Image 1 (cartoon, helix red, strand yellow):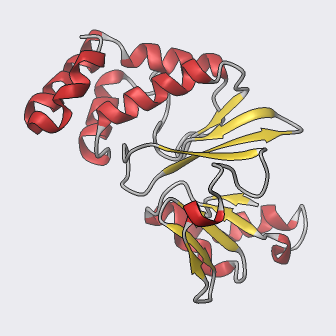
Image 2 (cartoon, rainbow, N blue to C red):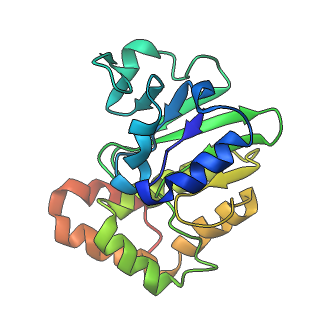
Length: 208
């Protein structure tokens, strides 16, 4: 099973790493966090695998399509160890988050691009720039991450799309705390003012 499949330019490295653990034919499931091209260009390299996403499911290189809610109505995939959570379109309109209760690493979460990199690495001012350009609704992103940290204190790791190592639960909690800085909360408040009534009901949940 893979979480996202990366860009075509990265395929030789991805393929080499996969083949250290077995053959490509052994990949039966691909869990897509969202459909941005840097997360999904290599789908064609894994014919026959079942790709799952918020938009539904499809078996690669076939016309076998289905809806994720119909296939997995209980909120988990294949078994209760692989759960999914919808984010109400924060970074991307089609994103979904995966919670996996792993034998080797404990409870891990795959966040896609809901965190580009933690504030400890990327200054809040730079993060505001990223969120202005690449996040549909940074308020929903902040509230989702805050709720995730609150609901799953047993998380051991959080994997994010563009950082070179997983975050610990403490890293995730600190990132949420950093998003509650006056600078970032002011940015969120200004975002609400620009969006109008659509997000007004969320304003009471901000710290600023």
